[in-house]
Each structure stands twice: as C-alpha cells, then as structure tokens.
Amino acid sequence: MPRESASLIDRKPGWAPGLFWALAILTAAPIWWLVALPVIETGAVSHGAHALEVTLHAVGGTLMLTAGALALYVGWTRRGFGLHRWIGYTYLLGGGAGAAMGLALSLMAPHKPIGTAAATGTLAAVWLAVAAMAWRAARNRRFEAHREWVIRSYVLTWTFVFCRMVMRLPALADAGGETIVATIWATWILPLVLCEIALNWNRTGPMQRQ
Image (cartoon, rainbow, N blue to C red; front, side, top):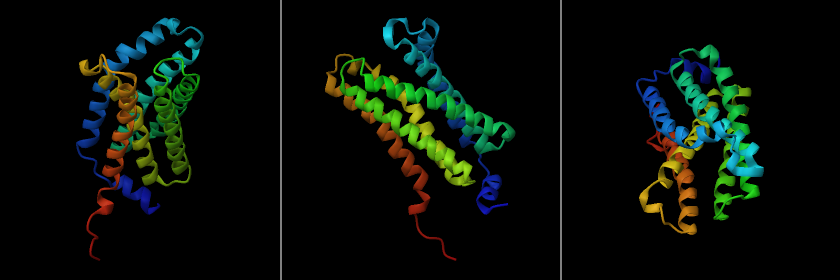
C-alpha cells in the first residue's frame, strides 16, 4: 500500500470532522431553505429567460452543500468509506453543474450592480478549477492532495452560505453598489485564505529533528 494512502487510513480524526460537518449543515440549512428551496419549488419563474439556469444552479448548489459535507465526513472518519467514491461523483457532477450555471449567469450579468458578476463568476471559475484538481489527484492516487483540494472546494462551496448570511446584515441593507461588490469578493476570498493557512500551518513550523 502506498505510504500516502496508509497514512490516511491510520489517521485518527477525533471529534473535529463531526463538528465541522455539523456546523456546515446547520449553517447551510436555513440559507438553503430561504434561498435555494423557493427557486427549486417555483422553477425560478421570477427570473424569466434565465429560469432554467437559475434552477439548475440551485439544484447543483444543493448537491454541492450536502454531498460535499458528507464526502468530507466519510473521507475523514472512514465510516461508510465504500460509498465515498459515489458521494464524491455526486458532489463533482452536481457541483460542476451548479458552478457552470453560476458562471453562465455571471457572464450574462442579469442583475445589478454589474460588478457582482465579476465576483460570482470568478468564484464559479475557481470552484471548477479546484474541483478539477481534486479529481485529478484522486485519479492519480494522490490521496493526501485529493483531501486538501476537496477541503478547498468545499470551503468555496460554503462561501455561498457565508455570502448570503453577510448580505442579510442590517448594516448592508442600504449599502451602495461598491460595498456590495467588495463584500461578495471578501466572503469567498477570505475563507479561502484562512483555509490555505490551516492546510499549510504545520508545513511552516519548526523542522522535525531526525
């Protein structure tokens, strides 16, 4: 067995995976209920010509949030690991469809301020790139790299929740276009930077003596 895959099997995840999974689900549930579910139920009728894209975006986002959280939990804890590959496929295919529709909607820029299209479109493109890296690492049996790329992709997935939470703050109710655009950029870039710091923290510490 490759050393990298053996280290993953021997890892003792402790309580952290369950806690992060629970937080992801608990924070995503109310936003999904308020934002995604109405779109799925009504067929995005209020979006006119973009109804199909918006509906697919909402369905894909739902698969992103649920399958992604479940894939991380199974990958960390090794519980039900026989389903990990299929959960991962669901995450990548559903999430890929959701991100692609998000990118298409951003390019069409149907809503104002127009600057939000750059922020959301870049987020969608980065998600697709990061998810592709996760898939490539798994294909090449680079399981540690795969785990880290999936974590990055799910952080980007969760930023949809974070963005919606922040945009509902009373302080932003009367914010101008520049403030809204800057907030959207910050809600996905800052979590990704924090994720990078967490993933690489031990690699920048004191070197272990042989």
